[in-house]
Length: 206
Image 1: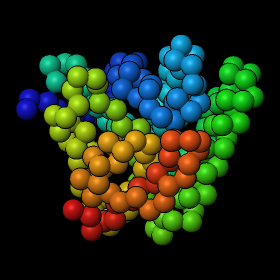
Image 2 (image 1 turned 60 degrees about the vertical axis):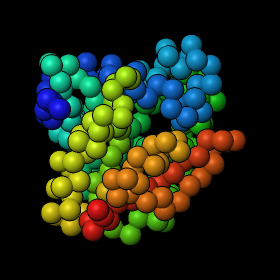
Image 3 (image 1 turned 30 degrees about the vertical axis):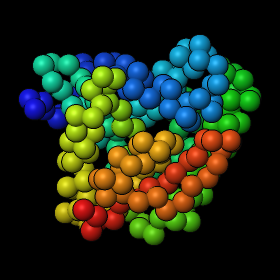
């Protein structure tokens, strides 16, 4: 497999947003925020751009590239940092209720509140890596690109004795992350058939 993994540079930032948007726009949590597909397509990219702009200074956004084309993106939050809902609000998500309405804003606040509560209750480590986003371009899943894209940080976390956490909303992705050493520690139903799963990988994970 002829690919390389690099940190995102300024000239690749917009392309990385596009790849991530196309990969995750129909994930259950996006459907939870925007049940209408047209609204989801219109609004999800705005949210992803705001969040990636917040994550960019942390210098841990990676891309997997093949033939000069980005096929996947992983956004990480390092152990020394935490991205709370209030951090995201300061980054521009304060515009959410004005842009999308109070109903969507309420759902976003609720899901982030649940996330922070679950992490506080079920993550024993004080310092941990968080996989904030992982997306592989459509048509390229099942090639091992997601595993390859996570490998640099999984290796670093193991060397530094750090836990890794992530949140996941699908059965298929749960199986994928379990194959990479993660375990579900708790799950919360946001609404019918939409489960927020907190997954943890210990430094001793396979």
